[in-house]
Amino acid sequence: MPKKVDHEARREDFAAAAYRVIQSRGLAGATVREVAREAGFTTGALVHYVKSKDELLLAAAEYSAKVIRKRMVTPERAAPGAKALRDVMYLSLPLDADSRGNWNVWLGFWERATQNADVRAMMQNRYTEWNNRLVRIIEAGQEAGELPRDVDAHRAAQGAVALVDGIGVQVALAGRKVTARHQRQLVNDWISSTFRLPASEPA
Amino acid sequence: MPKKVDHEARREDFAAAAYRVIQSRGLAGATVREVAREAGFTTGALVHYVKSKDELLLAAAEYSAKVIRKRMVTPERAAPGAKALRDVMYLSLPLDADSRGNWNVWLGFWERATQNADVRAMMQNRYTEWNNRLVRIIEAGQEAGELPRDVDAHRAAQGAVALVDGIGVQVALAGRKVTARHQRQLVNDWISSTFRLPASEPA
Picture 1 (cartoon, rainbow over the protein chains, first blue to last red):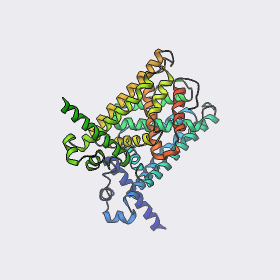
Picture 2: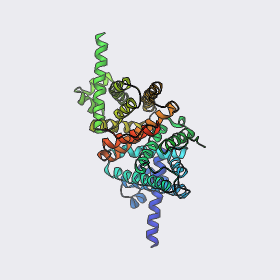
Picture 3: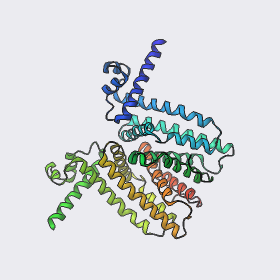
Picture 4: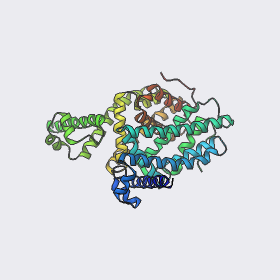
């Protein structure tokens, strides 16, 4: 048993290292050698745990999913309604330098997904998870009487996914000019118009 | 004079060829050699008109802007209001194979923009133009009494830009599964909730 645990822990170390390298250098800069160095191991050691560069990139994406998933559980479990939805959407935005780095990774994966079926399948899984989380939050808000029931939860979730990605693109192109406040404002506008709630200024 | 006209016409031929190559092979596949071949010239002839690969890519982006701009003028000049807005947004969507190709180009430029300042500047110009067009259409609709005046035209335009990009991402990842009807539905939902208009099914 300990051996298996060690193997998985080591693999996760490499995934985390790959993620950090992609954040700072883009997908193109994430060579096996650079990732091994970041993790503090030799290239040979890395290759023992991860068979190919594509496998390494997919492991990095899984790693980032795990980090984000953990953060989103708290608002989802809080009181259902517009606040839970807003907080989860805020968590997905490129509000600071660290999350802007995540978004650069994400944009790289989009581009790669158009060319590579494995990356595309991984991205589709991630989006299904994200979309389902939003549907769940909206439906819980509707059941609690906090959000209007006549709004289609699936269509609203798709709109939310698209809005967040579009904001990510604007931030990638314009950087800090699209401020955190401005991003939150776009999310608030969307929530209030979609669910016919009073407009609210972001905190 | 004729010489200058020839020079510009030839440069546009190369831009159009570069655009077609990027559509089918992605940015990475758009080598100078491949573009020259597509245009029916030698590499040497191409280099005479376009100084670098980056210049070629930027020219291709300008070319595509010109094509799309021409298409968008008609609905913008039609009766102002929700219909003009909807028709222009439809024109920007990846509804068929040709426009899905355009979107693959666009995604490639996003990724490159995160790494290259010239590409980023070009993309910012394109987005400013697109955003301004939407603001103009929304404000014309408000002046004509077709759209409510209390909706902030600039914020609504930013929401529209983000939504369309987000739809483009979903299509790039899921292909035909995100049908044309489904894309139009997302735009219609957004317009009706943002401007408090009755919901409408797409044609």
